[in-house]
Length: 121
Figure (cartoon, rainbow, N blue to C red):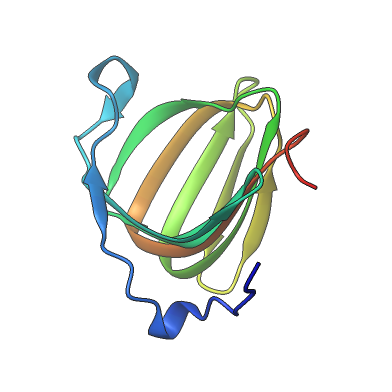
């Protein structure tokens, strides 16, 4: 198998656009854009952006996400009502099984890495 680096800055990945599912919306109807630059063996990584709005999130029991905010500001509130905000230069891991509300306070761009356990080699 030919192995090459995936450099995000020069990747020619077409963007994918979507919106939160209507039943999960909390505020607004924010458009999201994803450039999924890498996907293999239960891991995906890329760039994600979104305009202000909020929706409920429920992570699968086998999937974690690491993210690093490049610009903008978000707030993540867990089921117990504990909220954390993240802005430019800050990073976080959302653990498998997490449930809560994801809120974009200021249009955001972030790098992300999803890891689905049990599929990596």
